Length: 237
Image (cartoon, rainbow, N blue to C red; front, side, top):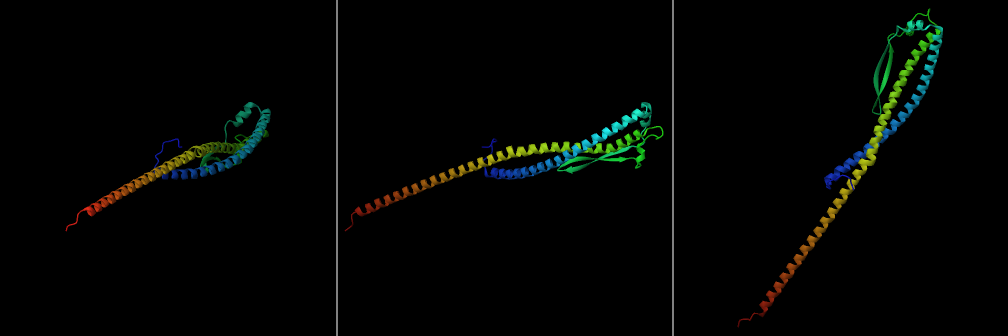
C-alpha cells in the first residue's frame, strides 16, 4: 500500500498512471546520461593522469635548469634579470557543454607573437642555463593551464554524476515504487467499489423481483376470491 494517502478515484488513477509513465521515461534518460557521463569522466581522468605526469616531469626539468643557473650566477644577478618581465599573457575563459555540464575552456594568448619576448634580459650577463629554464617554464605554463582545465572538468563531471546518481536512485527506489503502490491501491479500491455496487444492484433486483412476485400472488388471490364469491351468489328466477 502507498505510504501517502491518495484519493481512490478514477481521475487520480489516470493522473498517477501518467506520472508513472513520465517517471519511467525520465529514469531511463537519466540512466543513459549517467552512463555517458561516466564514460566521459573516465576518459578525462586518464587524460588528467597523463597530463599531471607530463607537467611534473617538465617542472622537474625547469627546477633543475634554475638550480644550475643559480649555481652559475649570483642571486642578485638572477633577481635583477627576472625582475622586469617583457612579455605579458592574457587568459580568457569560455565554456563547453558536455552532457549538460558547462566545462571551462582556458585560452592562452601572449601580448606579442615573438617568442624572444619571453626573455626580459640581455644575453651577455646571463648564463645559457637561465635561458633554457625560462624557455622551458614558458612551455610548461601552457601544459599547466591545460592540466587545470582538465582537473576542473573532471571535478564538475564528478559532481554532476553524483547528482544524476541520486536522481536515478530516487526515481528507481522511491518515486516509481510509491506510484506503483498507489496505482495498485486505487485499482483495488475501485474493484471493491465495483463489486459492492454489483452486489447492491443484485440485492435490489432480488427485492424488486420478490415484491413483484408478492404483488402477483396478491392479485391472484384477490382474483380467486372474487371469482369464488361470484359463483356462490343465487341466480334470479
